[in-house]
Image 1: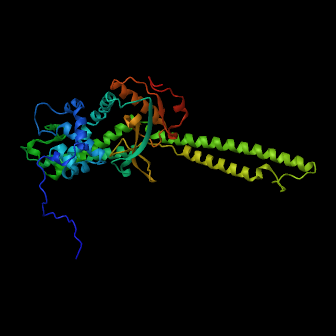
Image 2: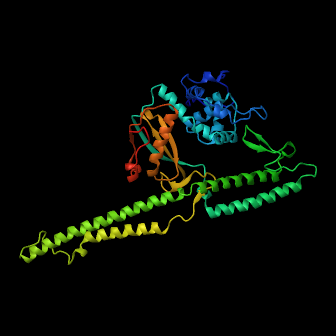
Image 3: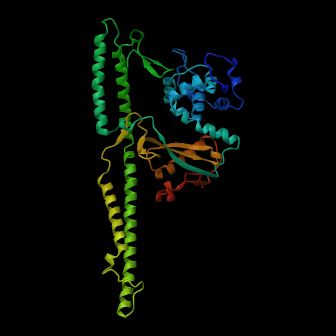
Amino acid sequence: MGRAWIAANAAAQPALLPADARDLLPVDHLAFQMMALVDELDLSRFEAAYRSDGRGRPPFAPRVMLTLILYCRAKKLMSGRQVAAACFDDVGARLITGNRYPDRSTIDRFLDIHATAIIGLLPQTLRLGHAEDLVDVSVVAGDGTKLAANASMGATVDETDLRSQITDLQQQLATAQQQWIEHLTPKAQVPTLFENTDTDTDTGRRAATPDTTTSDPRWRRIKTLTKMLHDRQAALTRLQTHPASQFTAWQDRLKRDQQRVEQANDRLQHTLAKVHAIHERRSHTTAAGGKPRGGWDPPPSPDDDSRVRRARAALAKATARAQATTDHPPSLGRINTTDPTSAIMPSKQGGYDQHHNIQALASKGQFILAINAHPNATDTQALTGLLKQARANLDTAAITDPIGAALFDTGYASTDNFTTPNPPTCS
């Protein structure tokens, strides 16, 4: 007799699902916790981004979208596609949305439009946590981690290539617009990207007038080229407004290389002095007719000593490395056109990839006080900004407790960090 199995039969319906999705989840489920948390937040900044005259398609309520995104982030569902998929196959997500299904584009646009408002929620969480006696800033700790950016290293270009791409896209866009104009009938109104368009506040995009809403590939090409052009213009603006960011990593590397040269030179001088002293003692012992300690003949001169040779080789290696760094400074700024805030950084698994260096400062109980994105792979220059951001968030939350001890690992060690005063009210 064969073994009996519990098999999945898509055609069978062993039980009827309850009409209320809440009956499927325990009362302490994460979905209920996130809904309760968002209910305590002030979302007026989110609501102010939508038009108030009632025109256009009704948007998803900010409270629903924010709860959905926070819930999915807590379950490590990061991309818009993953969040959209959860609305179909995750009971908690379906409960939050009321069995509605925002698509990937809607989720990504919500994050893009409300990025500043989302950042502004952190002080509100501090206020709520402080009311529950969960925020203790007598001891805080900070650290950074590399998070993969939603961009490819292949999209990183220097300023010359970026300007060339902008010029090329402008020419392509002008040609595409001319082809669209020629395609229209004389009676049709000529659409442009800046005239005769309405802003759809639900989607955050500009839609063509009713007589031009078409699937014509010429019109789709205009919209695609326009987005590409705007993305590269935004990247160029960021590159111009952050002129020093591309040099920071090189400067840090050069400083470390120069310190290695100084340390190698100090070791060489110390080794030479030690070997010279040994040779003098051996010479005196031999001249007095004695036998040198060790019973072996010393090298003809201190420079031939193996310890001196190793120290000289280490100095030469450090000097060559520092010279190579000095001879290859970044001549032009580089930026990623897909995500201008990201940068090429070392990966935890080895090699390089497009990353964000996310810095976080937390209090006892791992209550987050501040989160920053640092533009460089090294952490030394992130310490002061992280502490200042934490102090600003605490002040916004009306928390006047001074920050006591701040703990960081050796990756933040530098002369400036040891000597720079802490932000006001920090002891």
